[in-house]
Image 1 (spheres, one colour):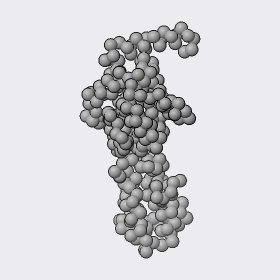
Image 2 (spheres, rainbow, N blue to C red):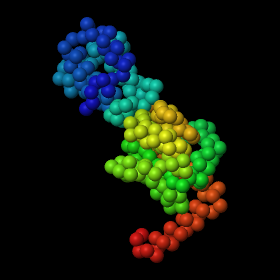
Image 3 (cartoon, rainbow, N blue to C red):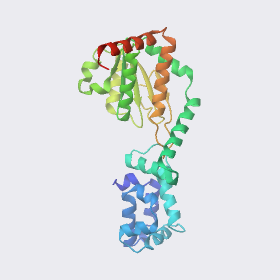
Image 4 (cartoon, rainbow, N blue to C red):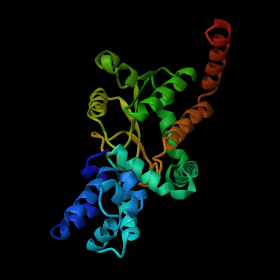
Amino acid sequence: MIDSQDAVSHALRELISRHAARLTPADERLLGVLTQDPVRAAIENGAVVSSRAGVHPASAVRLARRLGFSGYPEFRSFIQASLMDGSGDFESPAARMAARLVKAGDGGVLASVLDSEIAALEQVRSAVSDSEIRQFSGVIRKARRVFVFGRGHFGALAALVALRLNRSGYSAVDLNSQLHQLPEALVEMSESDVLWLFAFRRTVPVLKEVRAIAASRGTCTLAITDLGGARIDPGPDHHIAISRGAVGESQSLVVPMTIANAVILDLAATDDGRSIRSLQSFKSFRADSGLS
């Protein structure tokens, strides 16, 4: 369950408010059920919703008509659209999940996720250039250390990027794993280092603080964000802003991972064999150490 303010779009709240004087107690019970669970509200038919609200099976149809719709199917389509329409991703995780399930419909969840991922990846082809990838890899290649930072789901991506950089012969620090010792991790950050940020959906306070420290130390900052997560102040020195999918789609984790992989691959293509030699050395060490 989520709060009705999270579950219901502004348009639907306005619709309910506009017709509030005409609503009956049965209508109010139905609306209470509808606004408590965005997934079920968008998928169930009128008879099922009426049953859950404990009212007559025809009550959902009467409510829809009082709100200006021809019947309950049209009202349900409006609820579905209210989940998927918007200028950006939902702040509520439950509402985001609801929108994705609505979009999946009868076609199947796996097919819907695959379609979303493919569409999100395809738009990267025209939205991100090889020169932007080369800017990132060029800065990293010259750095003493690379501090990598992301929160939430992107903490896992930051950890993976730091791991791959270390294996490729570049000294990298996963800041997300050192949140309890951030002052110790950042105290020697300098103009010789690089800060690589992943910021999506919103920029959390600690990320802003780390960016501010980097700016005060003259540390070059790279950032990969979605189109709504670009509010980093001061702005990064090099910035790739990319959509991870439209509202109601899967909000791909593959998109930023693909861009990060391209940067690391470009490093290997331009660092005169440094990455290749380091990877070979690491493979030999792991095989000989008995730690694999």
